[in-house]
Length: 588
Ligand code: FAD
Image 1: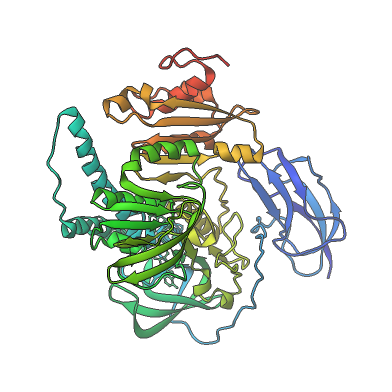
Image 2 (image 1 turned 60 degrees about the vertical axis):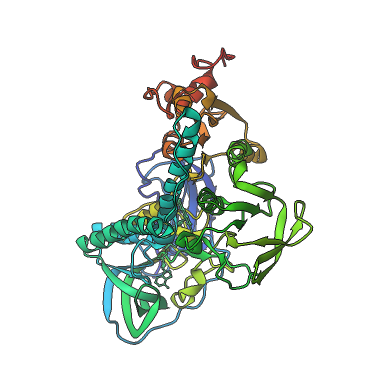
């Protein structure tokens, strides 16, 4: 039986008069539930409006450039069956998918447990999704193969690395004080005690998470999960501190699922197994401090761990295929870091790759190729492989659930964190770069809210990045290099810390604060800080970008004196030519 219905703009988060930037359908098209109809652009985000009915388009009532609000008529649709009414709430936007959707399996057996929302993986993405789901009244089960919650970030990532970096920074700081007449003796390093401190930090946080799961009545099932159809996950139960299987299995039936299975260290095929060759997890175990250490990969993780090992006594070499370390950050920031850290390195080999690694009794012998490759193989006491991370998408039976996974193991999602299977969401490292904990947490909240029937979108303007090296290198939004590559006309303002009273008082005035403004709108679109505590200050720049601040908003905000954070206000003043803490500037 056919029926004509009207599809209207749903609740779009309180926005009105929003521009239509794309119309994806025309008269005569057959559309399915959730197909994207139009794309809207607010000053915060773009969003697709999905179909809430199935049928043939009879008339389209909007065109590109029109302004619409909640309730505006999009199209009239001749429905062919009992499709949803036009008043139905917006369904998920259709996810863009370059991976093909597999045919789902069908589980006919019984289930041991059931829930509204199942979360697979208890990293920052997974536990945040589970806790938010429970807070929204959903019966939630969290499946994790390891004994503790917190995933890579809490157990073998962000937190233990920062616990070690903190100790390294104190040692380095104590050395700097010699120039001020305060001389400490050479530190005695008790590796067992340092390792125990790091483990205590991790334990405090992971125990806290277990308590919060209990308080929310989130049921944690310990084991390796694998989808067996679109509504069932089989868990091989595990025990002990690793992934030891007990031999028992549990089948969980779920209404909605959130996949948060994260990522793992990328292994390079030509590297042999040897205890002297470690990845970031091995580096955090801090078994010994080598005399000579090679870091393969000049990214943030490798350089952070290198900082720790160097402060504890190792000499470093680093090899990087690209033309600079810490890719992603503007070169002026990296230059400051590099100058302060030169003393740690014997060799920084750029545009160079590792082509062979041989484990011999006297050390690990490595052969390089490229612009700065030494002619002969080099001997190292330890090699840290920090060449990136790979997503776990291919290891969870996603195809049984009909969830598409790309060749590289990522799961593609839309802005509601929905996979190609509408009741299954995915978040965190598994859905793409940047692989950062704070991105995973925000995605988790969006997925949990949508799974609970709310409407939420991941529409963050920017995701910040921080290298917790010494000095720290922190950046957010558009970089100068990106602006140049994209042909966006920007203006920049730099406040050198040599003019900051606090930085001088700290004896650390090598850094600077840089703000990047869009010349057309005058709004801040990017910013970066290199210097001590840069990461702690970056949040202000994130907020300024999210709020669409201009230099006056930032410059006229009173920052406390004397702080490093003042440099942000002063950089904004400098952009307008009104900073009185710098020599006279040209007024804009
Ligand atoms: P993960 O943390 O990877 O968690 C996934 C979880 O799923 C794991 O616990 C895993 O055991 C579990 N799992 C996977 N498959 C299954 C299965 N089949 N069954 C059951 N359980 C499963 N990010 C930052 O933002 N700041 C930092 O300073 C920072 N430092 C880092 C330092 C290091 C050394 C490393 C390695 C990473 C660092 N990161 C940092 C990255 C950060 O750790 C990740 O981005 C973050 O952990 C991703 O969270 P996630 O929830 O997506 O996945």
